[in-house]
Length: 78
Image: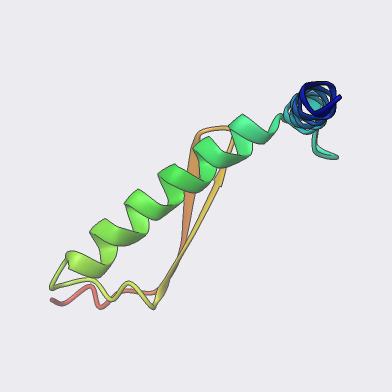
């Protein structure tokens, strides 16, 4: 009986995981695509913060379907 409960709990967890992984956002994107865009945004922001000439706080980074958009201001005389 105990093995049966453990197996049922395992199948339930796998089923829930499958449902969440197959869900799409309102924009029709999978969770993996959203995570990929988040990873790209993080990498770009990290590069901006590590650059001595560019203030990472002054630049907004948005990524959608792999396309990165930067907005903000920089001191062009630097």
